[in-house]
Amino acid sequence: MGRLAGKVALITGAGSGIGRASATLFAHEGARVVCVDIDEATASATVDMVVAEGGEAVAVRADVSSAADSETMVQAAEDTFGGLHVMFNNAGIMHSDDGDAQATSEDVWDLTMNINAKGVFLGRRVRNLGTCCTQMRNKRSRIDDGSTARAPHGRNAELASKEHTLGVDVHREIPHIF
Image 1: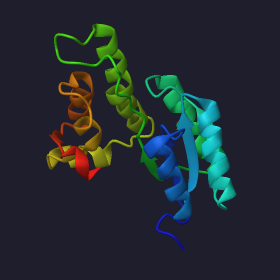
Image 2: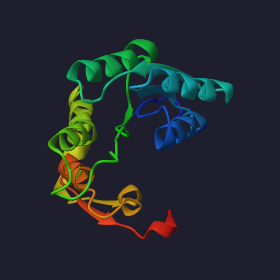
Image 3: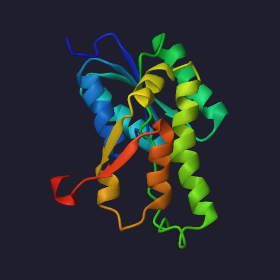
């Protein structure tokens, strides 16, 4: 039995990258996985990978910056698998036009904050999933964030969204370790 046997895990941004890798890992550990992505085709491809390895998964198309879609994705977990135990709010963007405070447009800032910060807020508020996050915030957590370390200097909106999401300190790691 894996560490997530009998659990239902919802992963946003499951259509590619860390989200896809997490979906296959969580399934390998025994979780039934709800693969959420704004691109339904990529979420379905992740489901196919999970199922091919003997796991159980379902694809859900959702925009994490939408309260209605956040409700829909959690409801899908409950309707399909009978509950929700783990929620990995992984969806996020690093927009190519996100520069320093002078170069980043308001539209890019808003889009980044809506996905990276508001998306996490909406996801954890749907079923009062904020309790563990409140405990983390009170302990002043820290994110060691490799994605920003590889980015050009100044990724303003992305860094701010990560700091805002849990009230954490964002630490830039050395790129070669990732």
